Image (cartoon, rainbow, N blue to C red; front, side):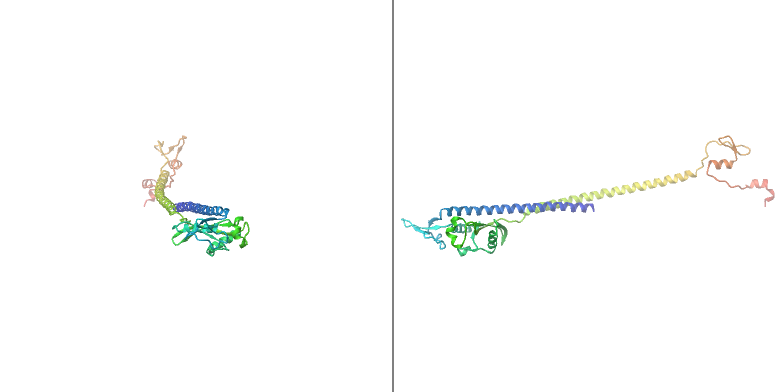
Length: 313
């Protein structure tokens, strides 16, 4: 029973530490994921602010970079004296191109600029993005969670895009004002998971197993020693009982032994015995006074013939 109790206590202690470490590891993983998502989002926001601060930037028209059909700007397209065609890249178009470049890298970071009222249909919010955009409108500052896509574990992060003065050039017609949440940028990061490291389970499992084995061996050894001690105690108890029995027997035998000893003065004629006070006593009285013997009177054959000859038959 003691071994079982100690084993259960040990397992409870190990389980408590394991649970605490799991919570700490999940918390640390979540902090890392949020910090990573927050850093990528802020990097995009900074780049967009730079672009918006310049009123957009012009780049050469290529097969990959065609004029933005959703940009309503009279100076969207320019042509230089060298017959070079240029088109304006606004913050939204720049963000989309960055996202497209990122998607070309397998298992790379994915970005998505989105809104509940998008100008570009492809920027329509996904279901989970819509939920988070509504939470931003309610005052939430950021959102994030872990999820799995097939066998891949990912973390998605999203924070709002807040309307600033230089945003109104394109979004004033949508009814936005400075300070309004007009959308958000989601960041999907592969390789991040809230799953617990298997090594943690292995380490604590090993500790629990070795602890149980140690407790079991210790318990068996203790039980063996306890059994030997009980046997020794029983043997000692038996010996004590035997000695007590022997002592009782000796005492009983001693009680039966006459207490008379030494030289007893006795009259050679009347057979009276002199006591230690100088008085002469009858033999039977002296013996009765100095022992536990009792007397009953009778007549021997010789005395019967001598004193009662007529009674002989």
